[in-house]
Every structure is written in structure tokens, then in C-alpha cells.
Length: 381
Image (cartoon, rainbow, N blue to C red; front, side, top):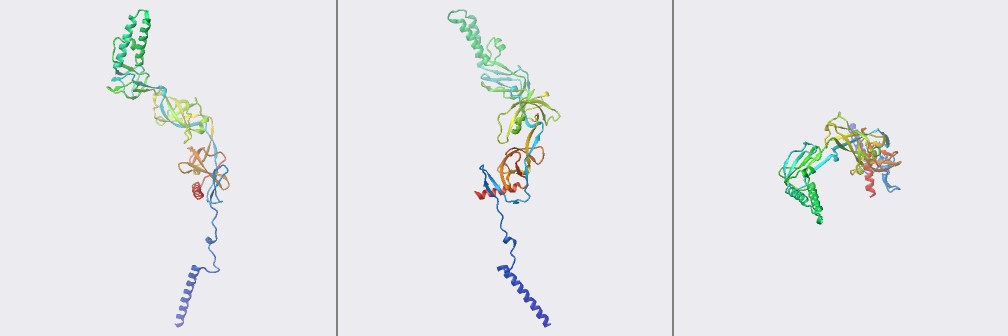
């Protein structure tokens, strides 16, 4: 029994000695101990920005700095022999006419309202104008003077004829036709204004009893036999489009109807933000189905072309601009701003500017590379 107690005390003393040794080594270190891996490893080189010969900057990235990063070539693909573009329908401006008041007065009667169809020459609004009555009285007086003037002295006949011509011209400027002027028997303060073209009342500003002044618009008329479709195309497609090219148009309202037309005009201006420009298409409108402000898709028959495409993963959106990282040398990457457009294949975008055939762009881990770019840029500034 005494021996067992002695052995137990010895084991307890040995245990405390071992624990004490472990604590001393942990606090002060022990000779001959193996250092940890973290204590002997040195940090690798960090990415840094270097200035290029052209003044730009490139990010020097140590080998295998970003695991899983891949680089892909910018691809050049064939475009089909047609050009699709989205647009909006509008009135043909050459087939739109305004009716304006040429006199001061008051609207007495109106015979049409907005969206009504009118015939050319149809009387649609009556104006009351004392100015018109005064001009008619002057014309009748000039007629009388011309008939009574028969003396050749002092050019009496020539003067009377000139006064008559001037009075007639004044009535024409006030909106009276030749037939209306010839039918004047006595001065009248009222005049009916006819429709200058046949079409639809697009806008009606004529209200019965309203006062009007010279130059005020009363009606806006338009026809829909032919309409315009203004569509946007990309700058890269400009060489494939020319005036007179035949096209087809479809709308969501009439998906089974195909409307035909041609390219009438090409805009001289390019939007620098989207690298697009507009084409104006003149399209026949049988049945008057096409309405202004409708959305339409036009398909222009063109020669085949080429386009640059990259994977969508290669894009980085930063500061309201798309960027890609281009490998200009092994381990050196240049950040470039690019202009893009949609493409028919999912996961692929069309490049309009910023890249060239043969460029190699970072595809996977482009966001992490962009973060390293900002880090290196902040450290160098």
C-alpha cells in the first residue's frame, strides 16, 4: 500500500514537470525546435503599375498571382447578309401640314375634331375678322376706281391698276383664294379656311369663340399612306448601309404582316456615347395599320460583314464604363475602355471600339484583377 502511494506521487511530479517545460518553450522558445513554415516564408512580389512607352500604364502581375485566371483571344466573326435594327414609326414630315390663322379675329365655327379624317379643300373652320372685312372693302373700292379711271393724264389708269393689284394681293395674303376674291360682292368679316391636304387631324387647337392672332396654329394634319421608321445602327455597320436599300419592317401589333420600304436618309451624326447613328426608312402603309410612336423592327438586306466579339466574363464595369484587361506581354496587363453592343449568342458581347483582332483579354477572374489594379494605383499615387 505504501509503495503504491509512492508511485502515484512520482507520476504526478513527472506530469507537472512536463507541463512546466512545455510552457517555458512556448514562452521563450527552445533550442533545437523546428521553426514554423510561416516564420521562414518571405512574401512574394506584389503587383505594380509600370509606365509604357506610349504613356499608358500596365499592371505587372507575378506568375500565378491569381489562381484560375485565363486569357482568351478577341474573335472576329462573320455577320449575316442582313442588318436588324429597332426603330420607331413617325409621320412623313413631307406629308404633314399646318393650318394657321393669317388674320386677327375670333373662331366662329369648327367642323372637325382631333383624329377626324378630312378631304383636301374641305372647309373646316370659320374665322370672324374685321381686318378681313376692311381688306375686302379696299379691294372693292380699288375695283371701282379702276373702272372709273379712264384719263391717260398723270398715269391715272396705271395707278388705279396698281392699287387694284395691291388690294387683291392683300386678300391673298390673308388666306382668300382666287375664286373667293372674284366672288366678293360686299365686304364680309367671315372667312372659311379649307384643309390644304387630305389626311388625319393630328392636333386640334381651334376652340369655338377663342381669339386668334396671325401665325397661330389651328390644326395639324397628316397622312399615313407612307410613314417613316427611324432606326439606330452601330457605327461598324455604316459601310453596309446606303440610301435606296430595300428593307422589311415588322411590328408587335401585326406580327404576321411584313411592310416593305427602303432606306431614305442616313444621319450625318454619330452618338459618341453609344457609337450609333440613325437611318430613316420610308415604308408603305397599306390599310394605315402603322401608327406614329409604334415600335418596329427593320431588316435591311446588306452585304456580309465582320464583327469583334469577346466573352461577357471579360468585361469589368467600373465608373460608368466597361473595361477589359489586355495581355500586352507575359505578366503585363493593360486596362482598356471598350464600347460594346448586344450579340445574339448568350454570354458573348460585340465590341465596337477599344479592342483589335489578335488582342488577348483576361476572361476569368477579371474582377479580382481589377481590384489589384486599383490597389496598385492607390499605392503608386
